[in-house]
Amino acid sequence: MLEIENITAGYGGLTALSDVSVSVGKGEFVAIVGPNGAGKTTLFKTISGVVPLRSGRITFEGRDLSSYSAWQRAHFGLAHVPEGRQVFATLTVQENLEMGAYTDEGQRRRSEISDMILELFPILAERRSQLAGTLSGGQQQMLAIGRGLASAPRLLMLDEPSMGLAPAVADMIFERIIDIRDKAGLSVLLVEQRVADALQSCDRGYVLETGRVVLQGRHETLLKDERVRQAYLGM
Image (cartoon, rainbow, N blue to C red; front, top):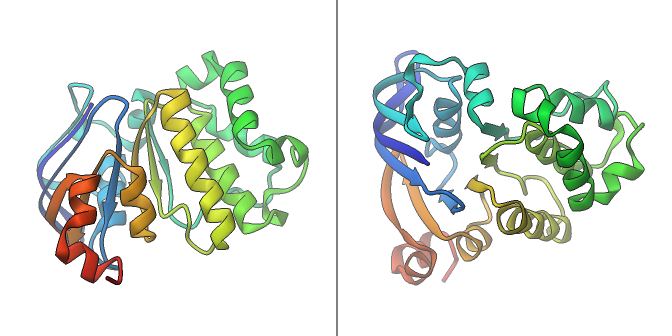
């Protein structure tokens, strides 16, 4: 589905990603973990078209993305839920979800997708008329994920969805992410600071350090890797 081949990208004169290759298959849950500053968020922004690609190739469902802008990529079925939630604070929950449904497929499947979102996150139905800026952090994260789902994507990219959340709320968010993959049949690409949770939940994972992939493999392989256990799992 998504093929990232030997890409290099960055901001201005800074190279944040160097010769990075990542793939996500249809229906797969793939996690990317690593320390702060490793280039994880830059990778997502490069896939989305916000950060320009210097070299390498990104294809989505066989389509080379290099000649398409960020808004066009959303119409192809890529949804990026950014770090820090970034909901529209002065709009209601319902209006935020409507903003997410601007893609052609999101409009076509609007009623169906709305029902799925509210089933995943019932609190959003209860707070439908509430301004997004007045929601709790966990509720805002649910809304951000719901807004991403509203575009009817085929690949959902989640950047640090547990950031700043209480452990119990973060656990619930992880459960919903697994539901999204299993029940909605979406592919999921996750960047996450809770390494153990990310690797236990995913099918495959990549470890990104200083802009390079240093380890990759099935989740059980990475969880047993001594380097991962020492550096990220505190073992």
